[in-house]
Amino acid sequence: MPVTTLGEAARAVLLTADPHDKRRAARAFARAWRQGALAHRCDVAMPDQPAWPDRPELLSPAHMPRRRKGGSERGRIAMLHALAHIEFVAIDLAVDLVGRFGGEFPRGFVDDWIGVAADEAMHFALLDRRLRAFGSHYGALPAHAGLWEAAAATADDALARLAIVPMVLEARGLDVTPAMIERFRGVGDAASAKILERIYRDEVRHVSAGTRWFGWMCDERGFNAVETWQSLVKSRFRGQLKPPFNDSARHNAGLTQEYYAVIAS
Image (cartoon, rainbow, N blue to C red; front, side, top):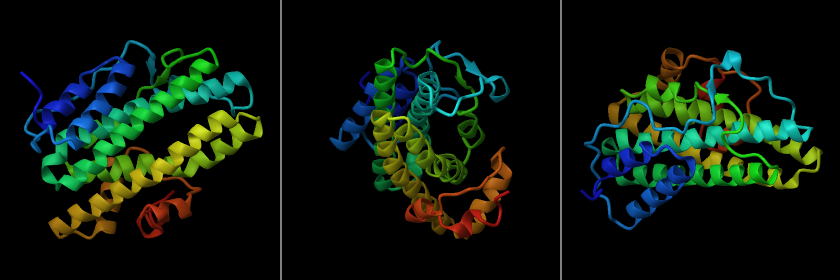
């Protein structure tokens, strides 16, 4: 049967294992929605775990090799590979958000998060292409196994998902990416720095979308957005909010200090 609904299309992307096929499927998903080919219905169950390739080998954080600062070529490859894995999983995070919770929101929510999925697919392609320029590729090194845990822990509640994934995990990218850009620039790797600059600009929009739709749903439920976010982070996020924070970028994304300053460690 042809895929005709938002939920069916999201599930199909999530069940695509090959990284490059998933990237293409995410872009096709976005295109089909924008062309009006998908009904705004999310009545299909999303998989608990997306389909992923056999490589990279997924390790627990405790068993991940220690990454170098990025000065050597080997260190830069390791850093780019780690980022490629983040972007690959981020495709599934955005698609699952749409397929699991899109029916609870207006069409603008779907517009935003399908756009995020397409961005993540593009980011993955840029990073994998850069790895290949170094003679490597995505899957050549082990990767962090815990990135999907936040999705599994928030599969029951759209507010919790928005609080943790864009407003904690992706917001962390705003904090650490500028230093990575400077590190690549400092060793003369302008091509890698340019890719990270593009990702950084897009991340501001992604965090903004998360914060905006979190606020929208809080308003719908009659909740205080800041207090609700702090409560959800304390109860649903297994890590800690650690400074330093990129307060300027976070503010530009609507994630002001009143959210995180009080509960940061």
